[in-house]
Length: 87
Image: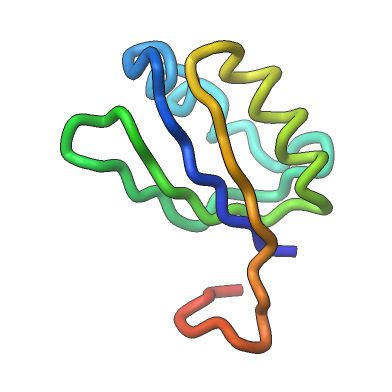
């Protein structure tokens, strides 16, 4: 399934360092890949499109990797209604 994660980033240096370190190791524990990463200008917010088995798996993965560096909200993408979603 494809999932949007909206990140509110409290510690940008830690958040982006974790991304650089951990994203090359995907797939891992029910999380297949990140398709898009859209940070704002100040790097304290980001919206990412992920492919994972479930929101719960993605949430567990991100908490393990990011700790207290950010908080997220999630939603599953309606693939039938989506435009521009790559496989």
